[in-house]
Length: 337
Length: 179
Image (cartoon, rainbow over the protein chains, first blue to last red):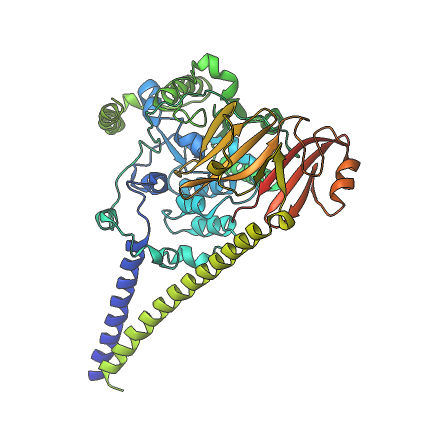
């Protein structure tokens, strides 16, 4: 009996040590709640009801430019933007794979801007996309494919190994959001109301090679295959960001891929006049991203396209779903005032 | 060994492991920083030997130098590139014959690249847009890295990049290799 209690105590101590270690990990990890909120977008999805017929994947060109609230208000389309900063194409693939564990949408919209990148860009961007993902096979794979040479898997498993030097930079935010998170987006759409017009652009430089790399095609094909296996229609888009330049040579390759695979591709840069985007008013950073007015115009245009080309449900006729969306819309309209 | 000793030993092991990992990672990071700082110091001491530099008339523009201290004339064109999420800005200043791109380094902007806009700009070694591949190798030698149409010469943490199309140089850019 004495031996039993002794063992029990040891187990209790180990459990307490693990709990302390867990709390320290949570405490030292950036919360992305009031600063660099882009890091919190991935995890907000887990708290959402999973009833989306359209899922967006891609980099900042999706989370800044497409508003699911407008899609719903205009056509009753339920959607979610699973975008993140500098989301690379293999990251989009794994995020889509993870999303399909929760729900099967009718349409997946992928922004092709990331086709231009064939290797990880920086640890900071990796962290914004990966840190807040729930643990899963997909998270393991996304880390493995995204890590830079100087990174290691352990620091993603135990964030304390990466963020231990934050101990003297902890703020109130780290305590407030130790065990909870707040929503910083509307279904993945990050509102920005500022205006910074396009006044000039840098010189459009010739490139040594315009050909997308094999790894980009490999993951684009994987995204397509995943969609096919799940009976989802894949729609490729290029958001109307005027910089960094989207070269004609890039565009031709996407057009060719889309035609070969019988899928749709819209380059919104060709539709700017039709949409009514005014780059003196509709961008918050000189043409890299649209602001709220620009995103609203673009999403309204896109809602027409989606409705005409895909069989999507008008959920405004479904009282249960509509109730949820009306509450969100009320908050959204207050926020955008 | 009594139970108290076991408990203390377990806690001590856990604490030591955590502290050990943290110290190891901090030291590793500090060592890398010192090495990087030494590299930069060494380069600034031997700027002419170990780096490529660009001259516009009498003005020498070194890569990674503080842009504000260059006292450049008013640019023809200016563009800021804010990254997707971070506060830092890359800035692009366009002059008559070249473009300077800076990157944020703390409170200062440092020269990240110099890109030639026309044949009026030429490298220190006398190569300009429109020259041939042979002129490039004559002036810079054969010790280049070739990626598709790009030819890269490296000195320390600076590079000069040429793009060759149909045997002619169509693009010249100096770049600084940031950490």
